[in-house]
Image (cartoon, rainbow, N blue to C red):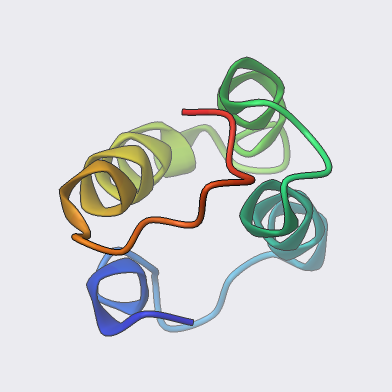
Length: 68
């Protein structure tokens, strides 16, 4: 996982949120699906999801399979 994304994450990420993050990074779900689902176990994760999307969009070698 890129350090830019790791910097956004809390010390202990809820397993369900991790599942959605991994699916998003693999390109299995869209950005919209990620933003909808990532925070479901913990509403404090709303800014974390925004941070992840911003971090991914700033990476020079963003994964072309991601639905940004």
